[in-house]
Every structure is written in C-alpha cells, then in structure tokens.
Length: 385
Image (cartoon, rainbow, N blue to C red; front, side):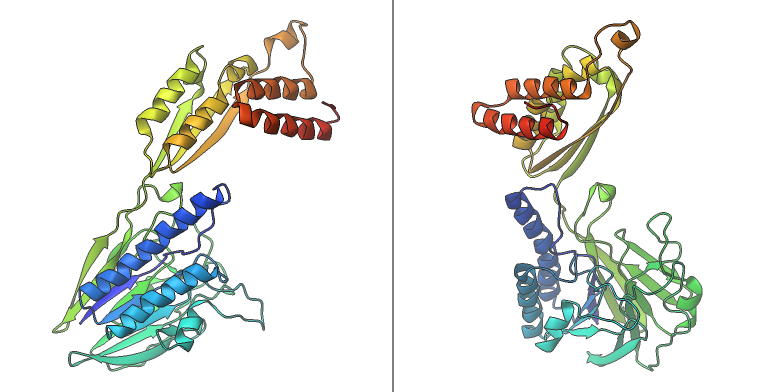
C-alpha cells in the first residue's frame, strides 16, 4: 500500500503589494506545486491521496483555482486513486456558536471525486481495501471554536480493526509547533491513547516525521514558501508505504519559487556613493523569477537619507526580479541645524522637498503622476501645492 500525503498548498493566496499580473503568476506557481503532487501520485501508481487541510488560502477562493483542483482530483479518480481530505483553518469558514458554513472542498465530494471529513468535533472513518489490506482512513477537520492550548484529540477514539489505520488532522503537534503559539495543540498523550498507526497533520509549514509510542506522525509541511518567514524551509510532501505490518516514509521535495531577503544597515548608506553601492547589491542578488525583499535599517540624518535615490533603487529592483519590495526601517537623527538655530523645515516643507526630488528622478511619463500625488498629499496636510 502506498499513500501520498500533502497539506498547506494555499491555492488562491493573496499578496496585497503585488500587481495584478504578478499576483496571477504567483498564484499559478502555487497551484502548480499542488498539481505536481497529484502528478507524482499518478505516476507512482499510488493507492491513496491524503490531504491534511489548507488546500486553499481562504474559504471562498476564486473559480480558477477551484476548477484547477477539481480537474486534478478527477485525474486521480480516473486512475483509480481515491482522495480523502480534511478542512484546515484557512479553508474553514469562521464560525460562531450555532453557525456553520461550507468549505470549498465539499464541492468535490458532491461530484464524488473525493471524500471530505467534514466533522470538526468527532473523528469519522472510511475503510478501503488495498492489495488485500484493510486500510482505515479517519479524519477530523479543524475546529475554530477550540480554546488556545486545547487538545482537539483528547477523549476521541478511532474504532477500527483494520490492518492499517491512518488519521488525518490539521493542528500543530506537541514539540512541533511554529514557535510560541496560542492555538489548539495535539498532545503526545492523546496520540498515544489512539489505536492508530499513522497520524498525518497539516497546519505547520515545517515538515516532520517522528513517532509517539507505536504511532508515526507525519507533518507534510507546505508545498510552496508562502512568505519570507519560511525562506529556509523545505517544500514538498510525503509518500507512505505499508507492508507486512511495517511502514516507511519518503519525503519528496519540490523546488519553490526563488526567494531572497537582504538587509543593508545605515552604516552602508551614509557615504555619498551609497546609491551606487545599493544598486550593485541589488544587481548581484537579483534573479528574473525571484521574490526579493530589500530592507534598510538603522539611523541616518535627513540629509544622508535624501542623498539616496530611492526611486532608482526601486526601479532597478522591480525590473530585475519577479517581485521586489523595499522595506524602509530607517529612523532619523535629530538634525544638528535645529539645535544650532538654523532653519527647521516644517512637515509640509519636508514633504515638498522630498516630492521635488522624486519628481526630478522620475521618468518623463511618470512626472505627471508624481505631481498629482504631491498635490493630494500636500492638500491633506493643508500645504496647498
């Protein structure tokens, strides 16, 4: 018996700063990672496709990713590979007591291309026969009403005498969490009390393969890095094999979209040729398919800051990468001229000064846009034109 286990694909992920064409391409990359898992399942002639939640990044995804997943599940069905899914915290509509809602996964169950374990309070079980083995697939979906620290499996049971018993869930597991967390946690004690061979749990985007007592715990992790906090994490899924009462796992890695983060301290921004040096750094680390974040941090005088050609840096980063973000964490020193009795610019005058510099460095077709933006901002500050 061979099963493929995946989770946290987050199709339809939204990035607020991306332009529409970038967002569409990024979403395509994320969807294709899920597609590669399905393709592997079919190519390897696996017996089961198991999904541990957060197939989508929201409970109301757009039609294109919903259709894409539907087509891939149909491919599995046509190849005789049944799909079993639980609902994650991103897929799950936020509920209040006495109210509920449908997850996007339930659409596929209505067309009989996947079985969804909908219940978030009780474990449900389906039994299938694979190569003479009786395999029990159980599942419990994410419950947004649980309290922080509450164990979602405490007091639960799996009633089966199958040869192999697998439970799907979508929670962090004790000793494998995303740092300090305030959310429900599956404890080792509850795992040990369940009579199951394998627990597969999504939610944490860092893969793991560990054991508690006689139970193997598989955390597939994510199939794509969703943000810079995951820049050092593997992306992929697991294959599980069971034979003669023994289980074996294999992690199959997927190549994520390149992601790079660079930080330049204020010390490197104080020289007159700071812009040139920053541009050299941008050129060295840029790649056409890369998501790149450049961060400035530290303390500068306003004059030092204004000598930086931010527009040129931004333009270079945007043209050399799939996506470029400049995070400016610079703090300003107190201007010596104020203490010496020199001229102190008002906030409006400072805005005018910055706007003039931006307009001077802008391309001809962008100057009018800069001027209009200047008028709007200064109007809000009561500074006229």
